[in-house]
Length: 73
Image (cartoon, rainbow, N blue to C red; front, side, top):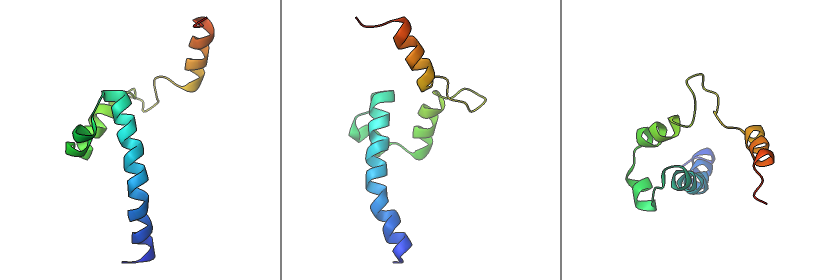
């Protein structure tokens, strides 16, 4: 195994854990749901969070504006 392959293998774990966290928050997936899903399943769920132009529909600026308009007191 080349050094590049080994680095990719080591990077997979943390990346998979981050993606699992995203899918848990976005779709309510449990770990077993995530590991049973295909990459196409994940892409289909995440596609709902991006408009057809490819731009995220809700960014940090929009969140900040909403938080100012509706403070939690």
